[in-house]
Image (cartoon, rainbow, N blue to C red; front, side, top):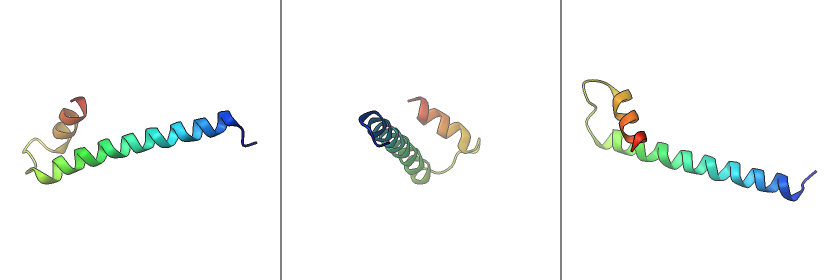
Length: 51
């Protein structure tokens, strides 16, 4: 079953996962390095993910 298309899809899935992980890590780093706002974490996360 291991053909070129399946290999490509696996690679792209891994790439997407890595990108998402990196983004989450960036947001987590920003959240942890700053003092949490009174409004809560949700506002912070949405603000940084939009940017």
